[in-house]
Amino acid sequence: MQHAYRLTALLLLSGAASLTAQAQTNFQPGYVLSLSGDTLRGSINFRDWDQNPKTVEFRPASGTSRTYHTGGIRGFGVAGEQYTSASVQVDASPHQVQNLPSSPAFYARQDSIFLRTLVAGPKSLYYYKDRNSKEHFFIRQREQFELLIYKQYLQAKSIVANKGYIGQLQLYLADCPTLAPRLRGAAYTQQSLTDVFSAYYTCVGQKPQAASQQRANPTHVYFGVVAGLSSTALHTEASDLPFSPNEVLDFERSVRPAGGLSADIVLPRNLKRLSLYTELLYSAFKAEKTLTQTSAPEAYVSNHITLNYSYLKLNVMMRYQFPLGPNGGLFANAGLGAGQAIKAEHSREVHQHYYSRDETTYFAAFGSEQKLEESVLAGVGGRYQRLSGELRFEGGTGMLNGIYQTSNTKRLYFLLGYRF
Image (cartoon, rainbow, N blue to C red):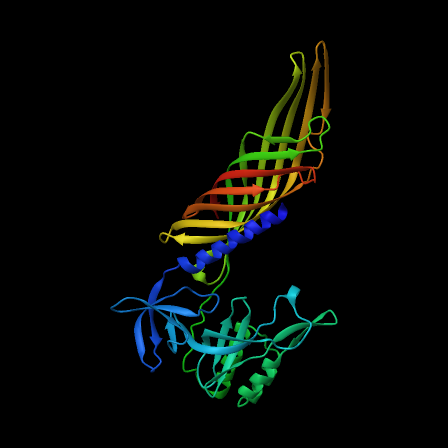
């Protein structure tokens, strides 16, 4: 069951990512460089790309918009950024620590992409973040782009790195010998390498011909509180109860208060529309159900089940904003949740009546209780200034997780929020 919930969450997040890629329209003044070298001015659909684009939508001053691929133009500029069309060779090895290879060998892959210019001049620096969010840096020599080499790999259970880029830059920037100590400490990051090139141009007494404006792209965090109502429907199935085999129960919805703390982490780039929304949320449900099995008019067995659960949930969702003006807009989010039961009360009162004899016994309602509930989440809402409202669905694994006893919950939330 847990695997199904995780798969559903991944599908929801993939859909959100696709929506992010397609929903943005943000034309800003810009230009494209034709293959013949002409500058065509108009508007570029600027998406504040986190990963370098392979296409760009251009709208001339008069006429309809057109999409250019890397082979159709030399490059383009918009919002203080410059991009150059290129076909480059990169290392396709995994870069996440948990997936690092054990071989130092490079696995070459050819990509056609628009490189973002970090520094342009006699000595230039270019940047490429690929579809796997791996960063690559390039220099340009004799009209050819050269990848600055950097690769991490495992050796005897330790992480080692091939820092070939340091030697490459020592040769590339050799007319400033005093730069060598700084190069030896340079990291393979955008800020560090850009600083190296700035120091180089200061050293040789020149200024770059052009450079993309280094826009500040901080990660903003907004804290807040949320409060509202939850409506929980519980479904259970049990086939190992000696007094009630093959019991399938659907409890009536339980409406209870919900509330907690939130942190909305707005990610850099992507027009500030994508954020990681996290919550520490209190949620509860209380349910009762009575089952009666009658074998004769004066012979019956009555089961009265009482459940009272409270959870402290950690919810993590990707949120996409649809601005409707400077003060607010709509949003959609999807993600995963994990809830720890802080109250878990469940009882079963079994009353047996056989003509003039009555007997009442008490049991635990179920046998295979679990304290941790996993869930998938999806919601839509709106925000105006500091206030927000959201309607959210949550599908959870419930409080049973046995071979013969299973459960699931379906919750609806209506939440109001206030951002500090």
